[in-house]
Image 1 (cartoon, rainbow, N blue to C red):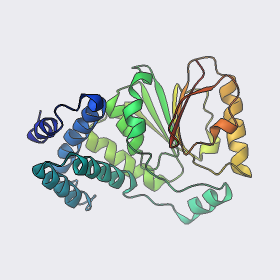
Image 2 (image 1 turned 30 degrees about the vertical axis):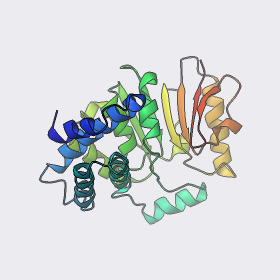
Image 3 (image 1 turned 120 degrees about the horizontal axis):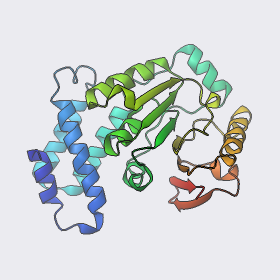
Image 4 (image 1 turned 90 degrees about the vertical axis):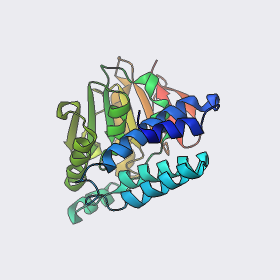
Length: 252
């Protein structure tokens, strides 16, 4: 356990009601400290160093709320770094009412543990640079993380992040496709952050997505951010958690 983690755990001692969140933040501290110590990392992520410096400063000041906010800002920065679409990608996204890549937050990472097993095949629809899916794999090692992304530039960035994080190549499959081209039936855990608007051609995607899942007989868990799936999924799926930001479904 490195010194930063020890100091953070000492700062949060006694907050047993938030122990799972504290444990997640401790893992992120260890990861971010490891990334920052690499000589080839700062040049590719120039905004990381000042954010990590602010985190260390607030840790020295003993302010747990600021420390958590700092860690969240680092997470958001890494999730959004080196993201970009080519003109042809933009044209294709616009045709389907696609959304730009956004960070889904720490809540899905905090809640996913009980639903990811060593045999899980996990999919992130509209993965961007894949940081969210990589964190699922980093936190809860499983059979395969499938990163579905239209932008080859983002996939290239994600492969670099995967290497920096020390995640074996065979654990992650990068699928260079439009989300509408990938059927969900092969996956056990699906993370989706509203990759297209639920109207026009985007609506057809959700209708097809729901039809495919309705035929699945193995257990499926869906973590949906800014959800619109509930208007399309059949009665075999039920909501077991919803806080207005994250909606979780199961067919069990």
